[in-house]
Image 1 (tube, rainbow, N blue to C red):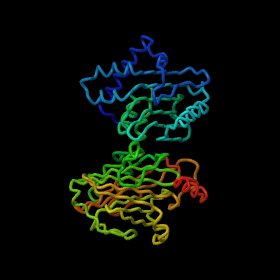
Image 2 (image 1 turned 45 degrees about the horizontal axis):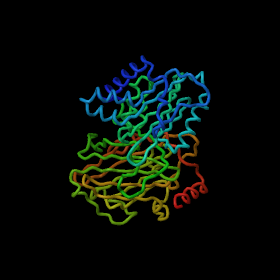
Image 3 (image 1 turned 90 degrees about the horizontal axis):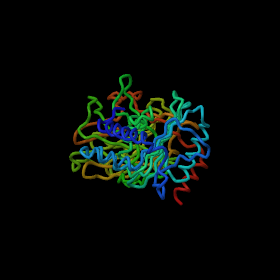
Image 4 (image 1 turned 60 degrees about the vertical axis):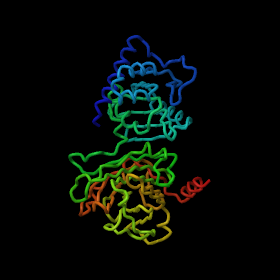
Amino acid sequence: MKLPKHFIQLFTLLFLVLSLALTHSAVAQQDKSDKTDPKGLILFDFPELLEAKVEVNLTAKLINLVTKSVSNQPEVAELIQMLDGIYVRTYDRITIDEKKLVNYFQQRLKKDKWEVLVKIKEDSEVVEISLLFDEDTVYGIFVIVIPETSGEATFVNIVGRIAPERIEELLGSLSNFGAIDIDVGGALKAQAEPSRDTIQREILAVKVENPPTIDATLDDACWKIAPQADNFTHVRTGNPVEDDSKVKLVYTDKAIYVGWHLYDSRPDKTVARQTQDHVRFGKATEDWVSFSIDPFHTHRFSNRTFFMANPLGKKYVHSPARDSNKTEWMEQWNVAANIVEDGWVVEMEIPWQMLDYPVTTEPIRMGINFDRGQTRTNEHSWWSNIGVREFYKNDGHWLNVLPPPKSSGMQGLLDALETD
């Protein structure tokens, strides 16, 4: 992940201050003089005595010192002022009980009502990012990183009052801090550009505890931490379209949630003709969006389901593999839409029980895509462009998603809890 220059400068400065502090033994341990632990702080107080290979305690005093030195760089100073502390511990894996240590901090976070934003476990590699936040502020970030090819386990705790939209940049800059040698921030971002050997795009699956309210406002806390798909391209030319679209995606054990912001420089020209649900939209005569999912990752049209909506919040679902005209099935998902000053907004709630998907206890990869029709500009755009001939092998990927067990009893319990 290529980092903005000012973030590299930021963490270079932080590292210099840290080095100076270490020289004077100012950060040998976390400041014990504080009367109360700040919100978002997780003490490295594992019951067993462990010797850390790397021990970093960048406290508020040192951070304030850095702020003064970069007062002529507003963007850098703004980010620094959000932070109250950065604490890092790196251990040699051969000297610790890795599973016991990870489980200890996972239970601490769960007890204090932290929410897991990212959880990746592939072979012996582990990346887990948890947040303590409310609607507008992130108070703590806790990262567990165990690279597959490394003999080290690293734990990072960032404390402060952090704007949710800055999390990705902050985590992406950790590699410049000198304690982590993998791109943590990259795990949060949808792939911005196709790579040289593939045109499929990717977005990470993020499971949330508190799903959004389907009201077409996108002001729920979960949307602020959700990965984003953007940079839509024209189906014919492959070039960026005049008005971009931004889509966010999260899920729970009950449903998949899709939040759309469809930008339009002339929202007064937005066209919505269909006023009834379950009637296919005229793709050339009104504005619409479509979310498609291929749970078995077959890249075949016959194994995917399309969920469509227009600016009036009318919905249409189609699945070649099943009877899409069955009203009971068609009614199971929810949509809300609203025309706003810079375009229009859509929220979708798609229950897992509408879909057929693999039975698994491990995270998997699913095929997904987002596309949009805009009448005013006569543009059809895709997130992962499959072209006019619709080569579904070029669909995007939803990474590390763990669908719920296929159990009607389980689903019934989830539904009951949701309505309590």
